[in-house]
Image 1 (spheres, rainbow, N blue to C red):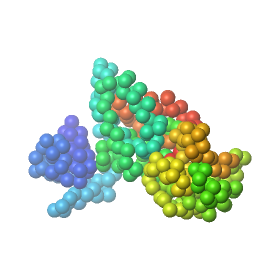
Image 2: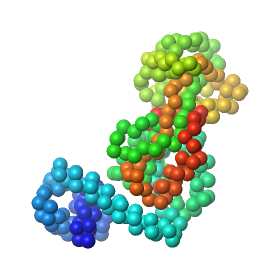
Image 3: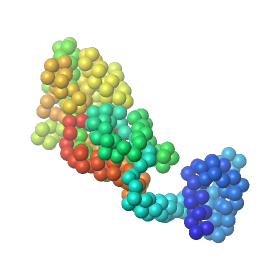
Image 4: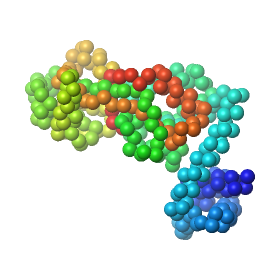
Amino acid sequence: MEIFKNMHLFVEVAKASSFRRAGDVLEMPPSTVSRRIADLERDLGLRLFNRSTRRVELTEGGRLYFDNCKRIIEEAELAHQALTDLQTQPSGVLRVSMPVDFSVIYLSPLLADFARRHPQIQFELDLSPNQADLMGEGVDMAIRMGPPKDTNLIARPIAQLNTLLVASPSYLQSRSTPQTPADLTGHDCLRMKDSPWSLVHLHGRTEVVSVGGTFIANNRGLLHQLALKGQGIAITAQDWVQDDLATQRLVRVLPEWSPPVVQAYALTTTRLLPAKVRLFLDFLVEHMACQPKSSGWQG
C-alpha cells in the first residue's frame, strides 16, 4: 500500500513538474513530497527526476515509470469508481474540447438531450481552435477532425463529414464561375489555412489545387459570412447553408467536385474511461452513428 501511495505521489509530481504544486494538489507539505520521492527512488535504485531550483523533470527511466504508474493508478481508480457507479448515478464535471462550428451545428442539440438524461453531470466546454493537451489541461475528451497526430491518444470515430464549395452570385458575376478545379487558382478562396485544396470528383478522381485569396481564418462561421458578403469561395457545411442555397444568397461552386470526406474522432488518453466520459462517448456514437453528414472542418 505504501508503494502504491508513493506511485500516486510520483505521478502528481510528474504532472505538475513541481514538488510544491503536487503538494498543493495532495494537501501535503513540499518537504514531505520531496522526502517520499527520495524514498521511492531509493527503493527503486533509480533516479526518477532531474531537479533544479526552478523545476523538476523526468529522467528517461522516470518517463518509463510514469507511463506504467499512470496506467496502474487509473485502473485502480476506475475499479473503485465502477463499484460506486453501481449505486449512484454518474456525476461530476465533464471537460470536453471541440471545434466551434462542429459543436454549434451538430453537438448543441445532442448536448441538451444528454444533459436532460443525466442532470448530475455538468459540462466545461472548450471551443477554442487550439489543440487541447488532454493530460496537462485536465480535459476528459477532445473532438477533432481527421486522424489524431498524437499516436498515444485513443481515437474513436463518431461521424463522417462531407463538404461543398459555395460563393455568392454577386462574387461569381464579378469574377466568373469556375468550370474546373484548376480555375480556382484565379479566385479568392476563403481558407482555414494556407495550403492546397484537395477536391474529389463524383466518379472518384482527385485533384489538388494551390489556392490563394485575401482571407485566412480559424473559424468557418466567419468564412461563411465573408462568402455571403461576396468576398470569395468557401468550403462550408450543407446543413449550415441550406437556407442560403434555397434563397440563392449562396450557390454551389463546382457541384461535381467536393473536398474529401473528413472523419470526426473523439480522443481520450485511455480506454479505461470514467462513467461520465464513457456515457457521453457512447451517446455520441449512437446518435451520430458514424454516418456521412453535410459538413467538414479541420481542427
